Amino acid sequence: MTALLRYHSALFLRSQRWLAPLLLYAAVVAVGVRPGDPVLGSLGIAAAGLLPVSAWSVRICLTQEPPAARAVTAAAGGRSRGHLAALLAGAGWPVLVGAVAAGAVTGTGDLAGTSGPAALLAGLLATTACALTGGVVGALVSRPFVRAPGWSVAALPLGSLLALVTTGSPAKHAVTALVAAGGGADPPWAACAAAVVLAAVTAVVAGRATARLE
Image (cartoon, rainbow, N blue to C red):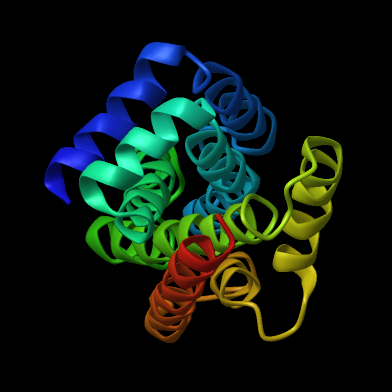
């Protein structure tokens, strides 16, 4: 699995397809977050902006291999394991980017009513919840569930929007916990745990579907 993960990460980084999602996230943070704003609200905005970026990143990793290369990967490591490695690579890099953004926002935001470590912890949990929820969206709108590129691209922003506004979504719960916080930071542990479970279930279902349908 480690070799497959390195392989998909290398493909992702060398292709430079990561540049567009990264620029999108940078634009969202630059527009929505200003130095001196309340830190918890800023962390919520930064976490929410990461969801469509993670969905986009996962879709890139799931579709970047040519069919011939995918067949070789499947023969070497198994179709399900190759799919799982692509999912992990696609969701892992946004988590790292979001963690860096959370640190920067915490360092420049207004900490009134909370402390730096508490705010950073809440931001990291929200970032993880949103990145993993976005990864679920990217997995569901990509192969093997949606094969047509046009439908996949159209479903990506719609799925991301629904994941941010639908009641019960881990991402919505995590972002709301920060944006609506009036006092000290309340780390969204439950939302992060729910996102981990949701992502794990989606990965298992996607891996089995890939093994059967491709």
